[in-house]
Length: 205
Ligand SMILES: C[S@@+](CC[C@H](N)C(=O)[O-])C[C@H]1O[C@@H](n2cnc3c(N)ncnc32)[C@H](O)[C@@H]1O
Image 1 (cartoon, protein in one colour):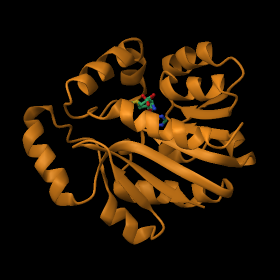
Image 2: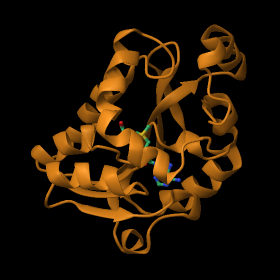
Image 3: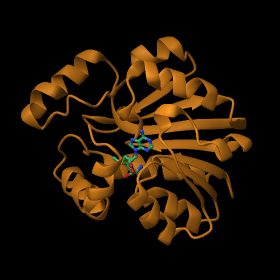
Image 4: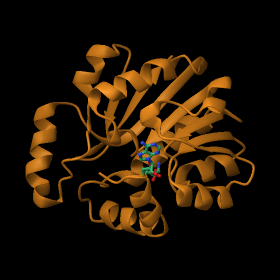
């Protein structure tokens, strides 16, 4: 699994390598642009939304939301990702911190219309995801939503099928979302499958 230094080194080539995987419709980024577009449309439906992005990377989506008048907060642990995203969004409130340890302290003092996490939370185990998401729901404004776009499947069987198809490309150190398992913990969770390996999970307050 990539650590902070790994993401620092990947940062400058990140957008290109994601594009190659998405355009080839291959695991892990098949459906990436579609995932971004769906989350973009949902957030923009609320004018000037306050958005917290968990693991914002180079700011591919958040910079677009910023340009459309959203108030942007974010947390990432990669120094280089924060530099690249900060150049695109000089007025955003970007904090460094490992989300395995929870939210960075300054982010706890605000509430958000949307908390988005795109291809980031698969770095947490399934138990860690639950422990992270539970308190996050309390950081939402009334009618707020957590929107997770990631490698995700409805069932574990579908995940296993994708693992077989991916062969050596499969990353055993990442923990992908299985909707029907997470929904047992969060009954209000909903899911849209976007490609053979990507989907958007929506969790209300
Ligand atoms: C695959 S990139 C996704 C970036 C972006 N959200 C996107 O849509 O392309 C994962 C991001 O999560 C960050 N990240 C991974 N593990 C993290 C952790 N434990 N704490 C904070 N950030 C983390 C990485 O630095 C990286 O920027």
